[in-house]
Image 1 (cartoon, rainbow, N blue to C red):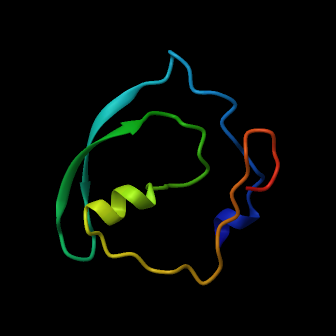
Image 2 (image 1 turned 120 degrees about the horizontal axis):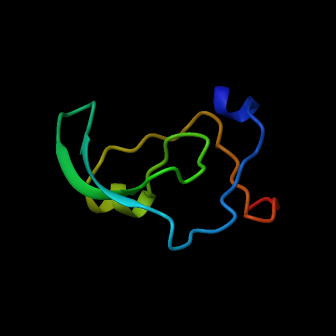
Length: 78
């Protein structure tokens, strides 16, 4: 919920200067490990994981008590 109080930020564009890095993700609930790629300094205001990736890997998902609002690059609500 702390993230909801922060000012909105968004990615204006991802260009040739973006940097993908190899990552190892460790789940906290059941200790599984996954190798993947991550974008360095995406401008995100928190830690986010693609839902499709999470479902494909069989990660345990929980509904948030309050959804985190998502905004488009132009500042409009998604």
